[in-house]
Length: 317
Image (cartoon, rainbow, N blue to C red; front, side):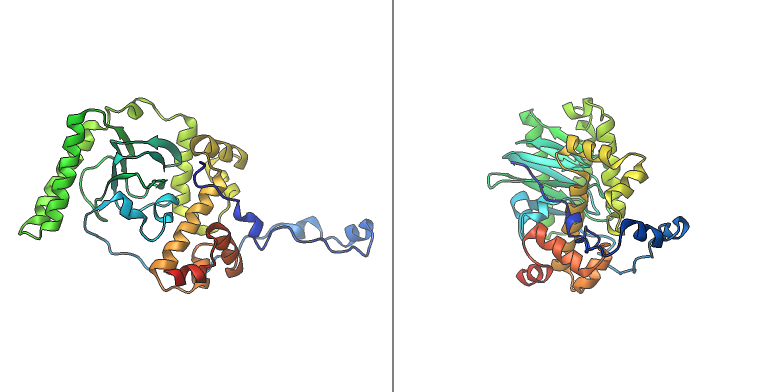
């Protein structure tokens, strides 16, 4: 099963190929009327209108959520490319699937712990048989945590039990309502940070240094996360990275089985769904905020990707 597949959205662009009109003059006459080369120089794009997007609070509490619950409201909430503004630990205790972190896709299985720093693009698939725990460290988290993503395959039974017990204790304190529960949970989170530090260099993934393709995919997804609302296309991102669009697409297909364009559009449509479901911004403003050339293009692109118009998606909740 190919995850995250989709047709590039460029075919829906207002600037897509238009039907040719019937020519009434000869080619020589058309050439004679052509503008001088200097006048045909491409003009810089006008600045896009600035649209204020509601920002969340500067800090949020830590949360412990069962992984099956993450998909409530739609599987897109876990499968589509996105990043969050807080560190995240996924502890899978049953099931298997694929997870993409920083433009690199790997398989995961039972007793895999995956740490994703704030701001790192990711998405994963989960079946009905997938169980485990997601720990969101909270926006504004000041704990000493790994600076890079970690994928740990925990084979030792004692180590598995240690991590499960830590997560259970954190959740118990968070739900207890007892005096000092928040402080106790923070101390336990600190111990979890130590656990991650001790095991970060022990996995087989850590022993394999990222090759040039993985490094480029990570740079692309980091840049994409920074500028996906800008209206830039893959060619412009590739130029920023100093490579050709063809090479960038080849690398993305190699590291995660998806094109560079597909990663960009998946990120855009995730953000569109989030804004449609969590804010009351008018659809035309969402279109502008995400860098689409027009609301009509946004509607066509969104419907192609999700099967619903933006209005229908919002009504469905």
